[in-house]
Image (cartoon, rainbow over all chains, first blue to last red; front, top):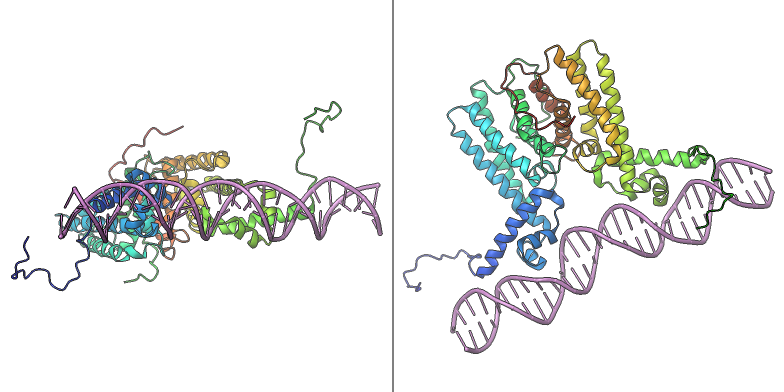
Length: 213
Length: 213
DNA sequence: CACTATACGGAACTCAGGTTCCGATTGCGT
DNA sequence: ACGCAATCGGAACCTGAGTTCCGTATAGTG
């Protein structure tokens, strides 16, 4: 495209991305995909060498795209959080609040049960600072979902978004790949939890400790 | 190696235990205690050096008593399983079946929430072969507890001992030390689960996949 | 009190897994 | 087609954690 003087486009913004060779971009995707697979199956201790091999790429290439294992991890974790947040927002569109919540839980559970990285990333308090923003967005969407489900009176009123996160995290870690009974599907676990979330007249939950906004 | 004919090699009963120096026995206990603490706090990746230091003992001493990290781990895991099994049997004495189960769950949850090793040991399917027997004993006791609680009609009939294990494992891993919200006590999580286990008229659970005897 | 088998401490070794480096390749503007 | 800079591959390097080894210290015994 000729740089016509009228090209009002291309303002001062230091467009960083564009001068990247095609193969580089392609390899980046490969690495990402391979890493997703390895981390899903083996959790945090998947190995860089394996990822490189799975991506059919040298280790050096992995490191050129992601300066460190941690960075790669965070990129993927952020990815997951974003997807979950999207699902949560979609669920907000559902006609019924309670149904919407359940759908969201179902999708999350399935994802979590098949991706060790997700539940491990969700669990560790300190690590994954890089994906903190995305995580918070997810929590916000979840909170909205929770409130809507409580408005109709179906979801116990004491529940908060934190509770949901905690429960789904437990589900992932108990039923995920490599866990003691991955075959026994996450669906049983989820069904029990959902029943517990809705239960009408049971004794109130112990108070949550100083909910951070 | 010469099979010396006179070397009758001690009588058949290889009484291993008794000729052990007093300090050796004492140190063994120290190591065990220190290891318990370290593993509880840091899970499987607690380090031998730290355990030795905490026990105020040299690394060599740790290895003289336990040939390998794995061995130490298994000794401790077995320990935990045994204690849980005892608790389960105690709970069988409770006047009410459902109450007994809940008491057991409460004690297990508290232990699990404060001991990363426990839930990690419970989860890993392959590892910890050494503690397999103890684990099975626990599962049996749990099964008895479950049946009794179902007899009175309070516990949902589809629940099995495996479900309990899975749930408690998730609880431990979601609320344990180092997890994303250890402060948010395990009690909330447990309350939700208990509600879910009892829930009367909710939709039936998806079927368990080929329960191993 | 002397003697020896038992136990101890901790430096040194080994190995695994993350990270770096650099010569060989290869996309792409001219 | 040419040439340079962006990329690549993967051997080499570094660090951390489990394990081994051996000279020294000590409980227990005659």
